[in-house]
Length: 567
Image (cartoon, rainbow, N blue to C red):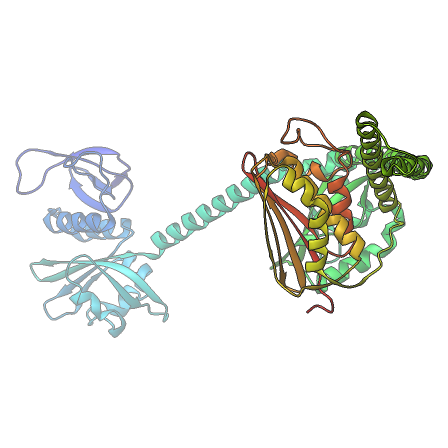
């Protein structure tokens, strides 16, 4: 008998007159043809075209074709044996009593019993499920050697009993497992390739070291930064990248980090440096991340070269140092000039006050007409001399006061002071000017209010604030003075209905010699020292002077003075 491998052929089924086209691959089933034995496996029928049938379908075709095949009249046993021996499936024929009538070589290979051990007998108990498996089912059996296997079983009836075709699933499972492992390996390779791509794309040097400090992984930036190639660093101790002066202590640092592994910057607050292959060093920042894996303890270090940033910082520091030095020099010069100015003003004020007192004194004598009567013009002239001399003396006194305050030479004569009496005293001094402008004056002073202060300086503060209120309040306006206790302080306010202060000027009004606009009469008056002196005297007492104002509606100046014994 001749056995030939075929890929395409035509066969005739018993119930069909014409040929039926089919495509096959190597041996599974045998079909009688004149002078040939045809061996097939996966039969692909035309409906639908180009679709490979599953294993169970192959088994179904085998059962049908075997049962339908005409056995030759000559040597039928040899023909059937050739069919069975050529098939990788196990073929078992059982008679109506359940005894084995046929046991193919495939059955012997899959199930483990030899043909002579089962022919004429019932199926062994381990595999008796085969006789009841029915259609295409997956069955777990126990081989003759005790090994459990999963098989696909297909049963079909024949004239004298049942035919069972058995396919071993292990090969198919092994192939699936192999494909799965291959896919997992491919996924791992892709992940490693992606990791390497990310590693190489990083802008910083990245290395991984083991618990002994040997370098396991590095990227291209590491090679460029330190001047080594990859092969020179792999397996080397990480200390080759550490400057010589720090190398001896580095192993101890690693041990301490392994004892307390956390993601953190290395050497926080320290100026770290890396060592290149040529021995030169450069500034770096290092971040450490621990990793515990199956291979043991690992540390990933991200190393950033900060040479450029350090150079910029050094230049900025140099510029800052230079300008700080210049600023300190300028400040010392300003302080010296300011001290000289204060000394000059104090001296000049003293020198000016001496002859001015003489002018005022003789003017007063002339006004008293002790040496004889004065005519109307002479009286007017003497009055102007006396008035302007007193005004000049007031200005000189203000300059002298400011100079003393700035020089820290003001000494307060603190004592218990009745604030109501001080307010009344200041109002008495300013009242003629108030009456001259027909200004309404209101007071609301809680009595008694005892403060710890210098009586003369308190009157000066109040007089300066009232003088400003009169100066900038038009005729027919209103001025109000309030005094009350609040949180251990006396709170005194002077409110007017004058021209007000623009928001941008509310800080600068306390600068020496600064004047805001003109008075209510359209003239600039005074030296611009009243408010600066008042503010400094209030602060000398331990209080604060603040202002609230609205242009066109007036201002309120409020200052605080500590109460006597914090009443």
